[in-house]
Image (cartoon, rainbow, N blue to C red; front, side, top):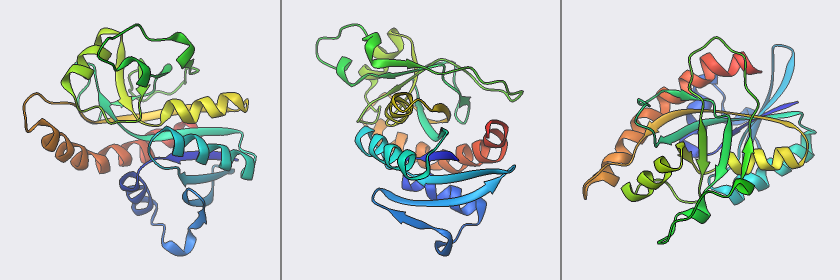
Length: 218
């Protein structure tokens, strides 16, 4: 069985709407809810794993053990770091980094021990590669963006590293497909504006991933 991890309630609600999944089809588990189906002759479980690394890693471990998963695909939104990205661009990262330890008053280099590689995918659809960093706080500060850009991180989220680290420990395949939903903005009102952009782009990103990219990698 293949697991498809979705972090936030907003992203999950879009997925349910796209697939026309009602509450009667959902099953509960300690970290949220999940939906089982079959696609292309393969058993799939979509599960809402929760935001931030503790919820993400715990829910992933639970689903791996419950369904004996052979692969986990992480889908959802992420925050742009690189100037090369436009909103709703798709990134399929080739490396994941846990960067919480480097966002400090005194910066130091990214620890390679907190990174994992991701195998390349072979699909014809357009996407960007690069490094996706994960942190337990959303990327909203301009100084944090500046630092992450200086060490080569292309985009940021709050879950992917944790999910894939658990998969690697369990020796199962993992993949991340994310869409750019927002970016830190300069100015006092930047955070509120960033949230507005994020909420506007969630349904666009999720529809693009679910309808176009996900069928190519299942």
